[in-house]
Length: 291
Ligand SMILES: Cc1cc2nc3c(=O)[nH]c(=O)nc-3n(C[C@H](O)[C@H](O)[C@H](O)COP(=O)(O)OP(=O)(O)OC[C@H]3O[C@@H](n4cnc5c(N)ncnc54)[C@H](O)[C@@H]3O)c2cc1C
Picture 1 (tube, protein in one colour):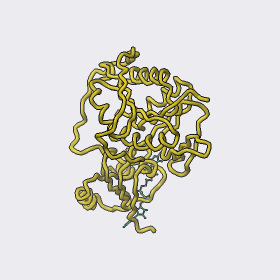
Picture 2 (tube, helix red, strand yellow):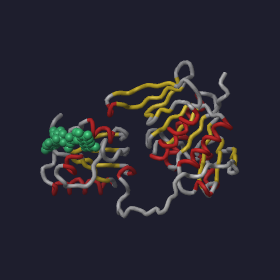
Picture 3 (tube, helix red, strand yellow):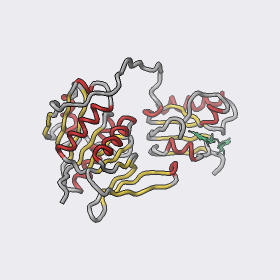
Picture 4 (spheres, helix red, strand yellow):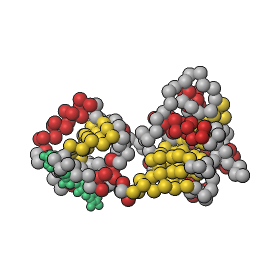
């Protein structure tokens, strides 16, 4: 029998780690095992209690100045050491840019598999974890099981629901801040925020997409108005930016990947390169004269 036990969740993104705890709780009860949240950072100890309220039975905290800014080597070294020491059977890692980088490197260090961008996670009759992800730009779903443990998956935003906060929940907090971390191989010289008035389109809960169905740039004001009413943002297909030069950015395979609650595609045909960037949307509505 494998010595690996327990489900771990990790993400530097607060909303995502809460969603991972939601899914992790369900899997932990099916697999009759415990759910642990991992917190890496500096001055993060106070946040452990919140994770307990959202379902973590245990929280492992590594609070270290080296983890103040994200640098992959110290983060990876913390996760690798913790995994060697505690031997979880499954790690759910938030599928952010950082999370994907960490998950892939962790899998390489441990010489185990990694399934990125899981859309669904379930267990089969034999109690194996079954991971599903979308491939070929959204045209196929691949189902994967693991041959060895720990099993590492990454999970995008808004796939799973967080649990209701319960202030009465009790959980154990394990302080692993004494770990010796590998130093970063690069140095951050400056971090400068990009000047922007809006939230990033990746974070928007509602996105209204506009495509070549629009003949005039001025007509986009209807989409701007709708976005304002719904508290969302407007996104575009690539031809509007690249060919017509109306906008600077677009959504899709070569542009922004979004995961809103609601995506309204107006005058967009749904070509594979566009769909690749919107497939994580929860609900997609198309307004198109072509049924
Ligand atoms: C390497 C590569 C990468 C790419 N990356 C991206 C990417 O990241 N993002 C991206 O978007 N594209 C990308 N593309 C381009 C992509 O292939 C498509 O050309 C593009 O997505 C199509 O944009 P569209 O839907 O606006 O236009 P079209 O495909 O021309 O669709 C227009 C739609 O509007 C509808 N329409 C027309 N008039 C009306 C009306 N009056 N009312 C309602 N509907 C109407 C039509 O029925 C049609 O469905 C990429 C292409 C390549 C080769």
